[in-house]
Length: 131
Image (cartoon, rainbow, N blue to C red; front, side, top):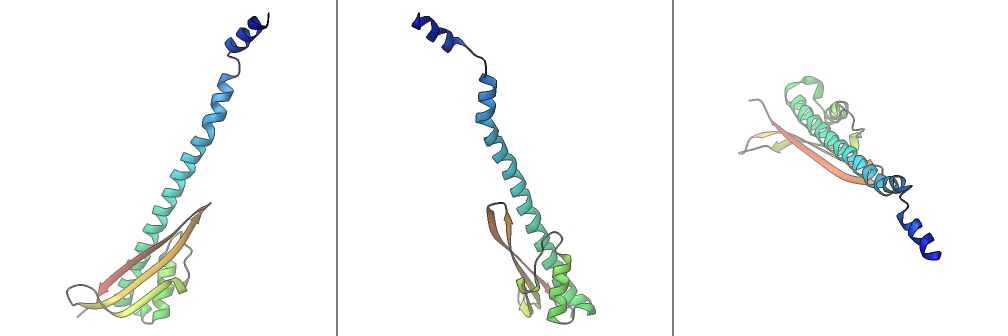
């Protein structure tokens, strides 16, 4: 009698789908969150790299970026999606860009946090002075 009840219990497959779903769902959720976090980090990295390049170019070409504070404000304005502060923007107006050419260098550091993932990113760009 007890053996028959045990056999019936072990042969019963009701609820297996719910059990499989309960075991696999956390893994799928972590994968989806990881994809979004990776995309967010790439987006912010691209944003600060573009902001550094635009600010360095503005410092050399445009009169609206004549001072360091104006260059920093321009970099903050071009950092789409990354709420950087002017304290995170470093400007060197007498930098050596490449092969001894003097220009303006702009460097940006930013710490991005997505849920529990936190990473510090940096971007630097140097634009040669017009001669």
